Length: 309
Image 1 (tube, rainbow, N blue to C red):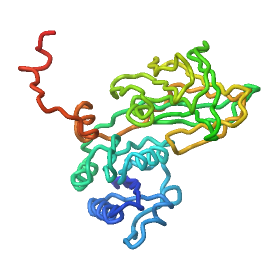
Image 2: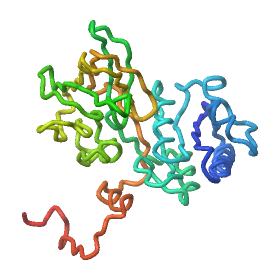
Image 3: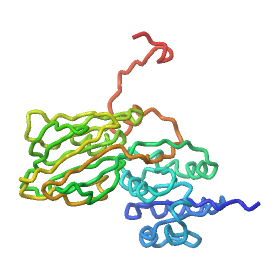
Image 4: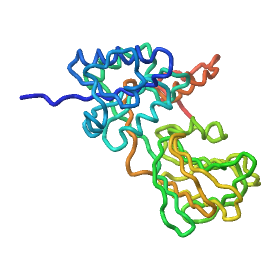
C-alpha cells in the first residue's frame, strides 16, 4: 500500500543571519527521510542562493489541510506568522529559536538537527494554546471586521498627539471609561509579550484566563485585570474622539477603529497547536529567557509534593 506523502511546512525569517543555510539543512534532512518540504511563495522569493528543487509551494502545490507540521526558523514573530499560515488547518507549529528571547520557540538553533529527526519520527506532543476571537462592530452594531489572536488584541490610538477615549466592559457590564494610549487584551501565551511590557501579570500557560491591561490610562482605576477565559471583553471607542483608533492583533493584522466602534474579544473556539519536544517547566523557561537571578536557591528537600506547607 502506498504511504501518504508527508508535507512539512518550513517557515523562515530569511532576512536574519544564516537562516537560509539552516533552511537548506532542514530541506535536505526532510527529503532524505522521504518527507516533502513546503515553503510559502514569500519565503521562496526571499530564500536566494540555496537549492529549492523538490520544495513545494504552499497554496499552489500543497493545501494547508495537507500540512502535517510547520517547522519555524526564527523568533516569536516568525512563529506568529506560521500560526497564521496554518490557522485553517490542523498542523502544529514547532519553533526553532533563531532570534533573541523566543518565548514561543521549543528549542534553540543548536538542537535543530535533532528536532527534524524527531519530527520525522513523530516524536513530539501537541499542546493546545488558547486563542482569542476578535470582532469590530460599528456604531450601528454591524460587524465590520473579524479576526483572531494568539498573543493579544490591542486597541490603540492612531495618532501620537491624541489620547484615545474608551469605555471598558466585562460580560456586558460597563467597568470604567478613561483616556489612554490603548488597552491590551491578552492570552496566557501573550502574557510575556505586549501584556508584560504594559505592566500586566505573567500567566502560566496552564492557567486559562484573559488579561486586560490599560496603557498609560488617565484614570484612578486602571489596573491590570485577570478575567475568566469565558468572559467577553469589550472596548468601545467613544464618539467624542477626535482621532481614529486602530486594532492590532499579534502585531500582524490591523484595522482602523472609527469613533463609536466596539471591539469585542472572547475566547476562540479554535486553539493554536504547538509541538513540544521537551516537558520543561514554565518557571525554567522564564528564568532562562529573562536571565533571572536564582543564585542562593536551596530548593525543597525531597519531592516537591511531599513538602509540608
